[in-house]
Structures are given as C-alpha cells and as structure tokens.
Image (cartoon, rainbow, N blue to C red; front, side, top):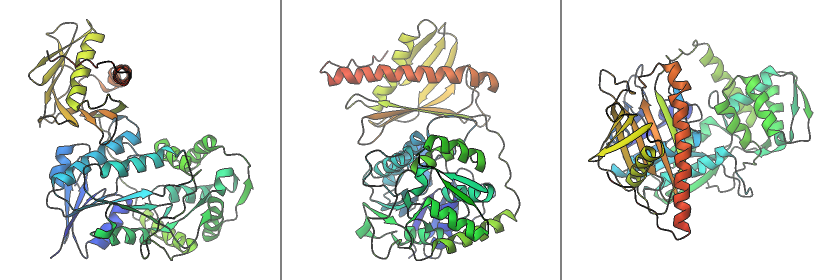
Length: 470
C-alpha cells in the first residue's frame, strides 16, 4: 500500500526534483501558494496553501503519512514585506510543525545547511537553518535533517551565483573567504539523500551531513567552473575578508536580489564540510566538474523554453517582528498587553477597546474605528490570531477574505512573534507605504522595548502586571 507524503515547497528548485523521484513509490500532496497552471498527474495532488496560515497548513496536510519541508523565505513575497527571512522561516516552520502534529504525521524530512562545529558565531543564514530545525521538532514530530553545503544544479541560489560570476567577470579579485572549504554535491545525489531517509525510523530525530567526493575551496570551484565553460579567467588573491564588500559586488554582477545574496555570501566565510555522515546516505560520487556540466546543460534547456512570466504586483502587506517575552506568558497575554499598551501609550490619538475577545482600534474618537479585530479561534498558550475584519483602514475583498494579526510564542523559547498577514490597506498604496506602514514599524519597536522591560522586571523579581481585560 502506497504511503502519502506532503511536500512544502513542492514547486521550488529542490521540491520539483524530489517529486519526480518520489512519485514512483509514494502518493504526493504538493503544496504551493497557488495551483494555477499546475496540473495534477498520477500520484501527485496539488493543494493551494498559504504556509503563513496555521489553519490553511493544517488542512493542506490532511491525509499525509510523512512530510518534507523544503521552504526558504530569502525571496519575500507580497506587495510589501516588513520582515527578516529568519522571522518568516521561523513562523512558517512553526505552522508546519503544528500542522504535522495535528494530522498525526510520522516524520518531517528537512533540508538544511551544514553547521560548522568549530565556529562559535554563525551567519544569519545558518543560524536560521538551525532554528528552523529546532522549531520543526518543537511539537514532538520526529525530524530527520539532511544538511548540505553547496548543491550544484541549474536553479537554487549558491551555484547559479557562482556560475554568473564566472560568466561575467574576465578578472576576479578573490578575498580571503574564497579559500574557505565547502563540500559541493550534485542535485541528483542530494535529492536521493532526501528520499532515502523517508520513513527510516532509525534516523528519526537525527541530522545527516551530505557531500560529494571532493572538498573544495570556492577558488577551486571558480577555476573548475571556468574550465567547464571554456573561459579563461584571471584570478587575483586579496588577503582580506571583505565579506561586506563582497556582498555588494556579487549583487551588482549577478543581478540577484539583496535578500538572496547577502545571507549566502555571509555564510561563505564558514567551512561547511560533511562530518556527521551516515553510511550510504548522501556520500556523493559525481565529481564537481561533471556535476557542473549537467547543471549548465539543464540550465540551457530551461532557458530555451522561454522567459518566466512576471507575476502581477500584489498590494498585500506582511510584517513580522520578534522580541523577548517574560517567562510563561501566553500568546493571549501578548495580545491583550499590546492592545492595552497601544491605547495607553498613544492616547488620545489612538484608543483601544475590548469586547469579549475582540478589539477595536479608533483614532481620536471611539466612533472612528480604524480597525476591528476578531479572535479567529480559541487562543492557545502559544498562538492567538485575530481577523482584521472591519474598520476604515482595511479594504475587504469581495470574497470577504481578511488580513490577520497574529501573536505567537516560539516553542522552547523566550521569544515571541507579532505578525500581520495578507492585510490590504484602504489607504492609497503609495500613501500607505510612506505613512501607516512606517508608523507600524515604529510602534512595534516601542512595544518590543515595553515587553523587554516587563521581562527584565520579571527576571529581577518584580511582579509583571497582567494586562487588563476591559
């Protein structure tokens, strides 16, 4: 009897390759933000899913035995994103972990990066990968993590950046980080490693490093990529780290967005060599140059298929802020504390009132309701989500789809997230982005300071005052 596996990130670079192999043995639930232009086939069912919504993710995971998490938020979506990739990944991972637990899923398989043991300070990218691994396991579902260095394939992030540098720069000045060692692996062998651990109970709650047959410096990879491309390149060593400067010229030369380039280049200062290996899993045999040849051939095939259609501009808002929390305070405490503090701190310009578990935010006069927020379902200790379902400052769609304001406490952590999702402002877009959006960031920064003081008072032994329930 065929088992079912749900894949978050199915339409991405790794996900699409994984599905081609998995469908031979498993039924697949493929999750994507939109199922437009995605046709189902034998053993593959596409489901539209907003991974930023716990309820949507829980529903989309129904019927699965196993789960695979192949998501990364370095490229923001939506019309306006006021959030770091770390906070977006943390929130999505928390939703996915909760959804797998609610659906009694047996295992989560996660693709991460190799974590260098000898490094005391990690880059933002690797810190985030490690945090996501912890959050995915925070609900008790066993997690098997495949940790890879540079994956060689036609899409993705790191290798296409390296290939563009070789194509476009006849002369390259190489800073010290290009002598850092990494462990590249062919996309086909990385995919096989992911597939091989599905359902392997002996590998539950374990991480496995994978890599190809060669440990190489970035300089060596540049040299060999140039040889495959049949391009003569002049490489000049520069004896300084210059990570910050490198981010700028890599972005300028490749044309890749800042959100992608900065975290990746920062990670290149770390040696990422497979150490925690398991016999028979991810110990690649395809040489680097052969992997590059395959990647470039696949890239050529894809480019001959025509340009990708540009997505229409979205006028929705996503904003996520993180801050420390007093010990043992619930998500509903966070919400009530926020609304009560907002009404007190911004009075008389802003006034807040509570009725049952719902809140109204008014400007100057209680009759001018800017936003009405209704608690969507019963709040838990870790999560309280409010639908932004009325008020002068919100634009509701014809389908009555609403934005959300969400408060959550991250598992096994003293940190919380406050997030706005899918909010459509009533103000003109250009005006909103320069006024209300910036004001929201300022208010959340001030609220973060307020909560930090409450947490400090709690640590010092002072009693933390509970938020009143008006």
